[in-house]
Image (cartoon, rainbow, N blue to C red; front, side):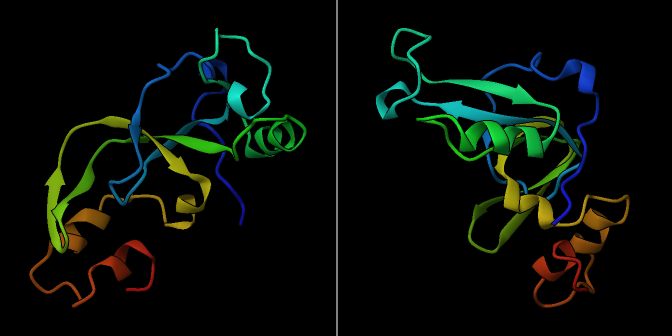
Length: 139
């Protein structure tokens, strides 16, 4: 899988450390790739025992760092969602029209990037029975 480039390489490392975790089903931009480090798992203790991360402009750089760093997690993507889908309960989908930043497992980027038609098609009355196929690029 070819992973997307970040929106603005000059801003990598400037985003807040705290972000939502996962969810939303769609993505608009990748802001940076992050590798979280855990001193209790062997990472250098740089923050008085607290976890910390390094930010990268590419997945390849992040993966290389994670592979050679003790106590490092696999890279995550910091994603901008301009709009997204909330699922407060199984099968109940809500269109949220506000921006948020969230961390995603990199594998979630295999889903197609949101287009102007993605969410209207998802919420359309004639959407396929499995609406998630729209997000997977299958419908």
